[in-house]
Amino acid sequence: MRIDVVSVFPEYFAPLDLSLIARARQRDLLSLHVHDLRKYTHDVHRTVDDAPCGGGAGMIMKPEPWGEALDDITAGQQKPHLLVPSPAGVPFTQEMAESLAAEPWLMFACGRYEGMDQRILDEAATTMRVTEVSLGDYVLFGGEVAVLAIIEATTRLLPGVLGNADSLREESHNNGLLEAPAYTKPAVWRDREVPDVLLSGHHARIRRWRRDQALLRTAQRRPDLLAHIPEDDLDRSDREVLRGVGVEPGARGMAE
Ligand code: 6GU
Image (cartoon, rainbow, N blue to C red; front, top):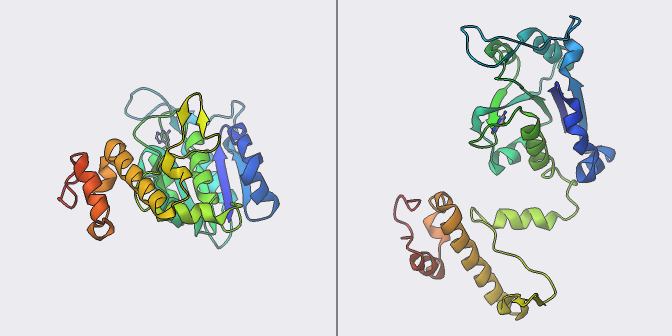
């Protein structure tokens, strides 16, 4: 996979030289390039923003440097999928990470200030796929941190990037529920015990306990996720556990 990132703060992406992403780059599983938007300015002040038309607070990123940057980096036949981080985008999800991981070329355009001139996105959309994507319902200074998160979530799904492929398999097996709590040795630490069942060696019971914990956690923290579990995925014990915390399994609007 190839990834290009354009930003006025290329230094933000130093973490991509660390750890598993660095290893993926060394092994040519990932070709990653960070570009400084200011390289595509021509005035002494290297201006990338201007006041919003129609008035209002903050500054808007100017179209000219972005136009040049996108033309330069994407010159040629094939075009990348352009991702633009924005609190006004569609929510980024694991499902989107899986779909991005299957693409040959991603490009990230990091906005700063109050956003980008809309014509940058409209123009880009005439030659490439453009998706505005949000990390969640809160506001960051700019897209850089969001892009780091999206790159990490996506590249760890590329074949060969994660040392232990079982980790990925187990995640998908947790099918729409939050993970159960996890423990390691020692069995007692500061008078706190690892739950007996996890030390029992009884695999069926351990599986059941983890499933119960996943259901309880999800009901408490993310009841919205329960609404997406297909009815047929819930066995008798699952239903009992959910009823125990006042969730009526299968009722439409289980999320409420
Ligand atoms: Cl993707 N960008 C910015 N600037 N703020 C955000 C965001 C993205 N997601 C949540 N808040």
